Length: 118
Length: 121
Image 1: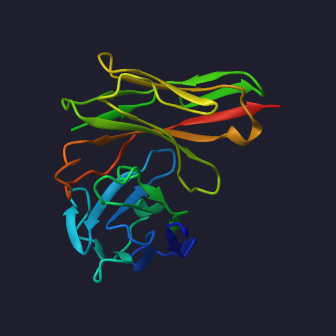
Image 2: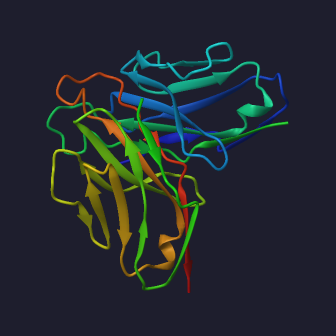
């Protein structure tokens, strides 16, 4: 079974530029999460999707961050314009929402995108 | 809001010995899940072990086991017979169980700051 795919692995941009990250979850997983992990800290949830609807975006800086999951499968996270403090690893995770599935409450993570804002 | 605290920024252990990583959490919920994730330099978070709060029995997975003390809100990870491949960052994480049966609710993980585990050969 293929895992969570993310691209690119690395991205370097200058402040005020725009950047986008892509995530393809495990096949059949209805729930998708984006986390931000700043160096030396644990990941922090940015946004959660259930199929193509947003469940939780309370910690998403909406003035500069946006995310979409139009067809309920892959997702894109965008930053526009980027700030120095956005330098971090952006992790995508997915989980199954099927009742009775043993691993229903487990989130599986991709390898992340490391963003450096100069 | 829930919080997760890992008070050990770094731990070091000799290969083949046992090490315990500490985690405490704060919540007003009675139904929740706790996890330990491992993050090697490759950055991918790998699930090590999970514990359902309603289960009194401590979870075990091969060399990994937890000491879950619900009243004390403590969730420590014990690694037995440490191996060089165990070297990584370890994160403790909390997830609500509120939507377990209704589905579709906000259930993102709340992570601690992590413990860097060093294995001495």
